[in-house]
Length: 105
Ligand code: HEC
Image 1 (cartoon, rainbow, N blue to C red):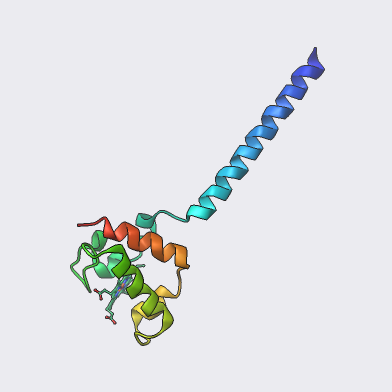
Image 2 (cartoon, helix red, strand yellow):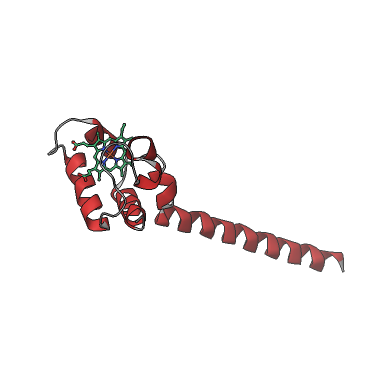
């Protein structure tokens, strides 16, 4: 019965499509993993935020890193490198960054 096989293939294809759509949606919600985002910081703060370089980020709490980044982003900390840098991230990304950096001891 060729028509039935055909139908089954279509259903499976549809399911696979729906699943991959779901995966893309879920990924967008969670955001890029913190370590990948933080690799942008290593040039100045050292690999994994452990220096040498400017302020060491490893060992600080997530809340402290996040609030520093929000301060930079708001412009309250002047117009330096970090103010410019922080502007490039969404709030969710700053959280991801801070949470990941806080896992570094
Ligand atoms: C081009 C160099 C450069 C890059 C790249 C950079 N930073 Fe910075 N960062 C600095 C400098 C310089 C300071 C000190 C600025 C100041 O105190 O005004 C600083 C300070 C900070 C501070 C405050 C630390 C403290 O103890 O007061 C945090 C938090 C921070 N950076 C996070 C990040 C994160 C997260 C990234 C990556 C998304 C990043 N930085 C990328 C140069 C950089």
